[in-house]
Image (tube, rainbow, N blue to C red):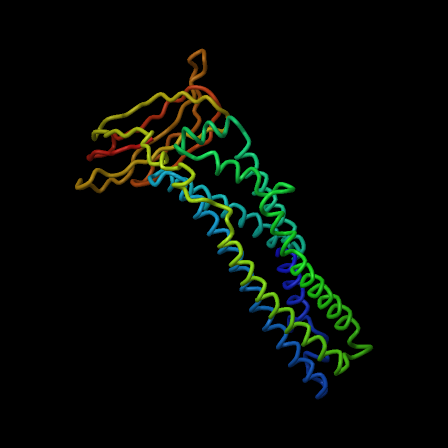
Length: 346
């Protein structure tokens, strides 16, 4: 899928009007004008298909994420997971934007996109197999069933569910990939030597037909494979997996009076654990101050304190978390600047 996206962009780069041979830009002869019309038609079809493919991949990623979220606690912790994903995707997009700003090629951009995709796979496998992280998830998320952890660990294994799909449906996609590569190669060579040899009528007709077949068949494939993944028995329901325990309220809630500071000591057993919190304005309270101070300290075995999360003012109704290693931590909420109660959950 990524390779097809890359090749479509490369072809569109070649078809860009400003990069075409001068004779085609000026439509020097009737034959040139006819070729330009055909190239414009090819460009339009490929732009439409590229947009559909991008939306297809985004929709698939959202469907998988939303399905996984049915296993998660339906409270502020689920919101934090969504926020983390959004932050991660924004950071990935920032990396891509940086490559483009630095003058990177289409290939450079897709090499980065593919690396990011492989990083997601590695993170899934680590999430499902690391004992310490698993223990942390059970504590932090509450009730994540083993079936989900097994799935995310094995999804891209040699004999995993994705490999089964590749073996069954991959050949049709690989044939389309060969076709789009041939179209790009033909265009590259034909446009590069257009000044010495113009494209013949029969050749341009074959090119146009190849683009039509490619875009139509690729559209059919994405529609079909989309239905396959929607209906594939990858997941059993959260209830069948015994995920009802995700509704357990294994978190703490307290009220911080106006003008007071609230502290709590947490003991963390595993590396890469999460300390998560959320706080909100007490219902019905009126005030112009809608923030609260917060910071996190690490307490060493010798009782020395190290600032992990620097003090800052947070807006109301905002959840967040930080990643920590094993040890003791002190969470401090400072409501001394406020004239209303705060409810904090952690």
